Amino acid sequence: MGMVLDGRAPARRLEAELAERVRALARRGAGGPPVLAILLVGAGPAGARFALMKADACRRVGVEAQLIAPPDGTGTAEVLAEIDRLNGDPRVHGIFLQHPVPPAVDERRCFDRIAPAKDVGGDGTLSVGQLTLGGTAFGAATPAAAMRLLAAYGIPLAGRAAVVVGRSPMVGKPMAIMLLAAHATVTICHSRTRELPAIVGGGEVVVAAVDHPHLIKGAWLRDGAVVIDAGSHPGGAGDVELGAAAARCAAYTPVPGGVGPMTIATLLEHTVTAAERAAAAAP
Image (cartoon, rainbow, N blue to C red; front, top):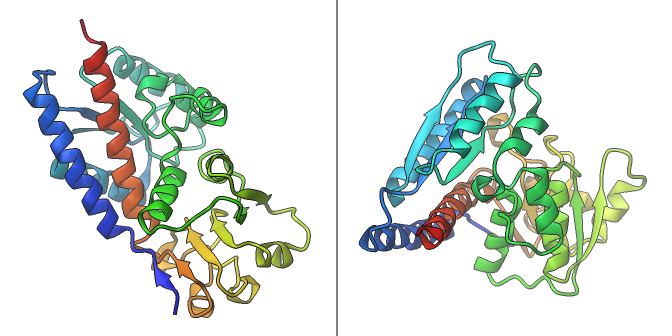
């Protein structure tokens, strides 16, 4: 049985570090606590549950969570106006738009409206571009969490063959960029990739971010692979058929309890960093 990359323990350690950083900001007289605004636009029960989990984590580290739920029927213009208001509020350090939004809302326009300094989810086009070129923007939260998890368990990436299954702008593409920055050799796969099982089988590190339950079969994975499963589906299923693969993996993330807890902790880390940057820039 491979090593379980449990995200809960390193997430708790990161939260403890963040709580001390929040206390340090207070000692410096940096104003109120860091503030994370979470926009819930028709997110439904699942989105609301994830937002409440983020709010609970905020309370644990001393970050103030603002849950903003516009009424049903809210359109793109109203969401953009709310983002403009939050961008202009100096008390707000991070803005996170809970995915997904209703079809009537242009999600990409909304992501791109968030000021890069407050884009703690790392979803805006400018943030992704800066990430690609090694800038200071925040990386997309889920891929950044996966990288933190790999580092927490001492798993080396330099020179290793990494396969990312999924090319979404929120997970797959930024995941590939981060792996490249860590000197892995990266292959990106998607729904039109030919010979997908063979390509996955060549990966020493496999990241599943395709949002399809159990698409990646256990038999596809090579012996000794490191598997990061970024999927989360009803019934506790991930994107990988881990029941058939765990015994052959060198290490793998459970679902739930793997990437998820680290994603929330990473979002809080970005928010605290944004608050620290704002305090340093204040006159």
